[in-house]
Every structure is written in C-alpha cells, then in structure tokens.
Amino acid sequence: MIRRYAALIRNAWLVDLQYRASIVLWLLWGVTEPAIALGIWWAIAGDGQIAGYARADFARYFFAVMLINQLTIAWDSWYLDRWIRDGELNFRLARPLHPAHEAVAENIAYKARTASVILVVWLLVAVAWPAVRLPFAPGRWAITAVAVLLAAAMRFFISFTTGLLAFWTTRATAIMELHAGVSLFLAGRIAPLALLPPAVAGVAGALWFRSMLAFPVDLLTGAVQGTDAIVRGLVWQIVWLAVWVGAYRLAWVRGLRRYGAVGG
Amino acid sequence: MPSIVTAEQLSKTFQVKVRDPGLRGALRALFRPRYRDVHAVRDVTFRIDPGEIVAFLGPNGAGKTTTLKMLAGLLYPTGGRVEVAGFNPWTGGPPFKRRIALVLGNRQQLVWDLPPEETFLLNRAIYDIAEGDYRERLAELVTLLELGDVLQKPVRQLSLGERMKCELVASLLHRPPLLFLDEPTLGLDVTAQDAIRRFLIEYRDRHGATVLLTSHYMQDVTALASRVLMINRGRLLYDGALEALVARIARTKRIELVLGAGGGDGNRVTAEALAAFGAVKSFRFPNAVLEVPREDAPTTSARLLAAFSVADLSIEDPPIEEVIRLAFARGVEEEE
Image (cartoon, rainbow over all chains, first blue to last red; front, side, top):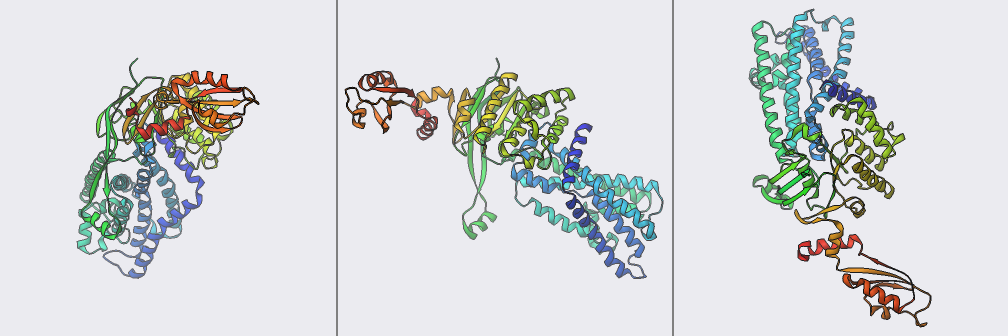
C-alpha cells in the first residue's frame, strides 16, 4: 500500500507542477481570508481586549487558522461530483484500489505542499514580528498534531460523503458550499468561537464544527487549557469522525447500488 | 472448458424521474416526483468461453454498455445472476478486478497533463506488477501498438488514436485474462481503427485473452468477433456466429457482374434483359448488380454466364450493415 500511495502522491505532484500558477492562487486564497479577518479584529481590538483576546492573541489565532485550515481542508466533494456525473468513476471502480485511496493521496500531496509553504511564511514572519510567536511547547504541538490528523480525517469524510450525494442529486457541491459557508462562523474561521454569541458557540460545540478547526487551533495557541478540556476535545473529535465514517459507509454502499454509470 | 463469463436472466432497471415541461412541471416534480422504470437490460442469458472474441451489437441505448458494466462489476444488476472469471463481479473485490480490464472509449484513465508513462507507472503500483514483468510487458505492448515515441509526450498532445493505444497499454499491463472494451475505436481514423483491431487479435492469440466489446463500426465486428450478441431494447435477439446471422436474415445474395464488350450474339445487354434473371439493384454498363434468392445464386450465375459475355462474376452477401439494419427492423426471432 505504501508503494501505491507513493505512486499516487508522485502523480499528484507531477500534475501540480504543470499548474504552478494555480498553486500560488490557491495558496493566496487560503491566506487571504484569515488575513482579512485578522485585519478587522486587529482594528476592533485596538489597545484593549475582546473576550480576553488582545491584538497579539488574534495574530496567533489567525496564523494558526491559516496553517491548520490548509492542513485539514478537503476538496473531495468537487472531485467526486465530477467523477460520478461525468463517468470518471468508472475506471476507478474497475481498478483493484478503492477510489478513496486516490482521494486521500491527493489530500496528502496538496497539504504537504501548501501547508509547508505557510509554515515557512509563519516562521519568517515570526522572526520579524514577536506577536505571532508561539511559546515553546513540544508536548502541546504533539497533541495538536493528533488533533489536526483527526480534524483532517473528519473533514475528508465530510467532503467525500457530501460528494457521494451526487449519486442522488446534481446539487452535491452546492450542499458543500453551504457547509463551507456555515463553517465560516461555526468552525472559527472568521472569529474565535469564544467571541461568538453563546448560543451560536453552543451549536458549534454540539455539532462537528468546533472539532474540524477551532479545537485544534485553540489547542495550538494555548486557548484550550487543562488535561480535562484537551481530552474532552479529542474525544469529541473521535466521536464525530466515527459518525462521518459511518455516514460515508452508508452513502458509498447505497450510492454504488444506485449508480447509473453514465452512458448507454 | 468452463465458461469465463456466465450471465443468467441478467436484468437492470433504472428509475428515471419524469418531469413535465415548463414551470408547472418543474414545481410538480419538486413536490410530487414521479418515476418511470426503464428496463435497460431484460433477462439476458449467455455464456462466453475463454479465448473468444465476442461483440455486442445494437443501436444506441440498446443495453450493450449497461450489460458490459454489470459484467465488470460497475453496475448492480436488478435481477439475474452473473459469474465472471469465477467471481460475482459485485462482490469480487480486488482479486476480481485484477483479472479484468475495462476500456471505455469515451472515458479515459490516462492522466491528461502527464506523459502516458506516468499512468503506466501508477498502474504498476496499483496492480503490484513486478519491475521485470512491467518492463517486459510494456516493451511488448509498445512494439505491438507501435507507440515508440509518444510515451514521453503529455497526453493532451497526443492524437485520439495514440491516446486509445496508450489506454490499452495502461489497461493491459497487469495482463488480465478478460477484456471489456466499450467502443474502443470510437472516433478513430481508419488506420488507427485497423491498428487496434490487429492488436486485439494478436494479443488474444499470444495470451489467450477473452475479449468482449461493443462497437458501432461493423468492421470491428467482422474483423474481430467470432460471435455476436445482438441486443435491442434490453433483450438478447441473437447469439451466434455473424455468418449464421447473415444467412438467416439475408434471404438473398448479390451477383455482381462485369459484362464483356459485346453481348452473346452482338445484342446489347439491357436492364430489361437482366431483369429476367433477378432484381436489378444497379446497372451501368458494363457493371451490374443483381439480387437473387440465396438458393438460386449458383444456377442463376450459370444461366447468366451462358446468356451474356461476362468478364467477371462474383456472388456476395448483402453489405453487413444492411443485414444488421434488417435484423433490427424485423427482429431476428421472427426469422426462426
């Protein structure tokens, strides 16, 4: 399986090399949103604090969002929608390799590429700007790595499962757009969850949104404190991951049975 | 020898949403959707032996591709039983998939932006092909398909024919005993079509592979298939040799004549004179084509030779396209 992944990732990178300009554009897209959010909160915070967040806290928060969002984002619903509707799923189903492996390999290739650039940028900025430096805490970083892995797996299954809805509807990507719109607020992309009205933050915590981004971000910046809170966050991530894996299994089995395999 | 493909009472029904035209229709479909059953394949039964080349014949939407996709495990049959290479295609998983190749003329697996060799390397990894085997098979396929200099060009710069050849290479590196080809020559020029046909026969002869193909080109069928399965509206109309189908459907033969310079007694040959021997399909001196009942062809030929000065005479079946058109128009079963 390692050889297969190596070959899939290699191909993904080779394809990317053909489209260097688009990599830069995607990267800019990933950076712009948190940069704008940071700019706004920077101006609002002034010299004071909002819900315990000072300017430097916002800076660290949004740099962490930038990195962790890149590490966990999944575009698979768009791929799957196309595979299913254009019949590109056919040859993938005829190979002795589950199509999800190709999707996972694509994710690894994409994330390794974009996140490493963001990490380097963050390090360079940190040299000049102490506000975005994180306290040296290897233990916390290790736990964050686990949380990021769980979040990436969950967002992969959310995206893959939503893409599978293309077996039933032509609106699968629209559902994913809606999810992305909601997660702008509920996952903490536009503001730390602590700043949201308690009811909204409650919804984010009760559903999977906090687990997919805000929790690992808060873990990295140190906003989540205490073993209890960390364990609780990780357990929720595992629970929601399991739920989405279950949804994926259901959609995959049912969807394939229904598959019309485009063409006469 | 046990069959490599067995289909018994194989059926596939799709549910299609029905929508009346206009805004009202759209709204009604939104709140009270209606569905219609489309029977793409109905109770199709056949067996295929190893090493056979079998062609599915039928108009668009006849159910050829649907049948092929059920055999390849892509579509879930609504009814009936299938066994392919000893597996149920739906549950066979990777061991089954290693034994088949699926080539779809209109949907390709080659990575568009990379040279074909990258797709081959990917498949080497996916199918766990040993390095030595990979090199040997690639060399063989590249030679047979005359692909020498295209392996390093990006796929998007290749011609359609080159792409289809590379598609075949990618699909055959794991040397499957069973090939499913859906319109393998679609849109190709005559030379490329011919190259693919010659390759498929050579490949079958070398490796004993079984080939199932669908095609719109009758030449694919006449050049390749020892047997045809004729499908129309989801039903199997005919299963057997192409020659036997022609003999059954075409009750006539064509006698093609090239007449000599002078008639028997210096009389000029006229269409009326020829009409005494059979139906005149075309006549422009010195060429004439007559259609006569099959069984009368030899005696009529002898009478023609006696009556006229004939430079050349041949007895032919009607063009295969016409036979097939007739078969679909009348339905083969009526002929039995």
